[in-house]
Image (cartoon, one colour):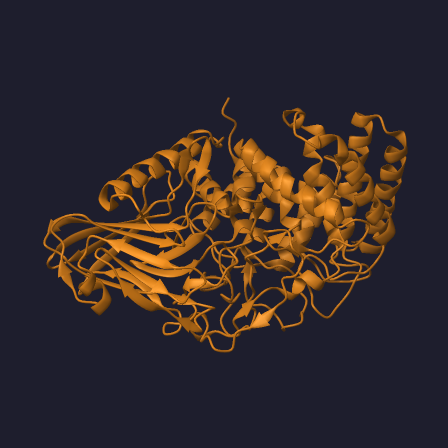
Amino acid sequence: MRYGIIGNCSYNALLRDGSVEWLCWPRFDSSFVFGPMLDRRAGGAFRIEMPGAERIEQGYVENTNVLRTTFHGQDGVLELLDFAPRFWQHERAFRPTALYRIVRPLLGEPLVRVVCEPRGDYGRRAASTWTGSHHVEYLGLDAPVRLTTNVPLTYVQEGTPFVVTSPRHFALTWGQPLESPLEETAERFLDRTIDHWRRWVKHTRVPRDYQREVIRSALVLKLHQFEDTGAIIASSTTSIPEHRGSGRCWDYRFCWLRDAYFSLHAFERLGHFEEMEGFLGWLRDIVHRFGDGRLQPLYAINGQPDVREVVLDHLEGWEGEKPVRIGNQAHEHVQNDVYGEMILAISRLLLDTRFSGVAGRDGVVGLVERLLARIETHLDEPDAGLWELRNRRQLHSFTLLAHWAGATRAAEIAEVCRNPVLGRRATQAAARARHLLDTRCWDPPRGVITQSAESGHLDAALLLALHFGYFAQDDPRARSHVRAIQSRLQVDRLVRRYDVEDDFGVSAAAFTVCSFWLVEALSILGERAEARELFDFLVARHNGLGLFSEDIVPGTFELMGNFPQTYSHVGLINAAFRLSRAWD
């Protein structure tokens, strides 16, 4: 997983050693334009490489999402800067669907080779080309793609190596061509993009400890917000398996409602109001739209419900792993925890005075009442659970925990809004959820909340009982609960999701965020030394650029699953703030 990510909140791209391994245009959930990550032949290519390179290094320009790749070879040293332009212009965020690449010789006279072969319709459509004086236009895709460069076009089209003695620039655009001077525009966009990200980081609240890790995770989280609507996708990729040979290959380029609370919690800790407001606006639109029906677990970034799952048999898959899926069948699931989590998420519009001037805020109480009604109706209904078991429904303890947390927050809202009817309903719903957890899900011999009612299996998501404040501070059950889950699910210091065989067998991977949940839980218990030791171990497992995927495989500690995973970085952010020393 040696990929670096760049983006501008309209699209993201993954790069490795000068190759664009994944780029979907014009937005996160579109077909890839470059996808060699999933197929070396059908995925096309956009590579800038040094023939015979002896060493390649990747890193970020500090506190930015600008990626720097340095090539070392016998002929010299070369620097490649890759970025998606993003900065403020005319009081708006300027974020064009364009990729800029700048090559600079640092030593000697290095050789460079460039290959650009975009694809459409997930690799099923090749482009025809039309050559201008300083650009190549690729036709036959969903929109014209144009590469403008000061490199001889013959070298680009034929893949001929050439010597670099001065900076070379590449601007790849979607739809609208570059109509300003290439060199000046590329250098100006680079400077302004670097400045933009550094200003954003300067306005990010960081803990006293683990600042670099939190800043990189914050930048990753920011890149996964589709700024046009405010939605946040789970990951930039599809079909990287949870572990090799598992068949657990999913499309995560959608917005899961469950993640809303955790993402908002992270943005709040980071001090970013605008991102919270944008996300809440998207969530509010979704909740308004569902009427009195069920909420889906996930939606497309434009808020549409149809994200049907399709298998693409023509693609070879990540390192040959199949199937390759687009869309996600989980949108059909019944996952009742979303109602409580939506109350937790939108409650900030009512409980946080910074949102007092937000348009439409007064209607949020009505949304809370409707969401609470869904909790009341479905409180003891079996569902697929947060891990999205495809062929099994149970009364999941995490769903009950979300019901309890949402209803408890609704009672707080009722008190602030002086709505006694809502307060009584919310208090009664919270009491019902707690009763079910205590009588049907609590295992007295082991002192732990089990995965589901009358089940002996354990679930790492129940570590969040401490995050939600389910246990009182002096409740001895909290300690036995955490230790039981840790004893059963922790392998090689990593935490698996659960200990039960699911629809695809037994998973060999550890879901990355679960380990960060354990760090949080241990810190809340006061076991700060143990929590810090585990956190230090976890953050050292990054891919070399501070990035984390969905899963880590025990034993090999290989990063697997879709990449980078926002859940993993949200978990890191929340754990770091919980664990860090106070500034004062």
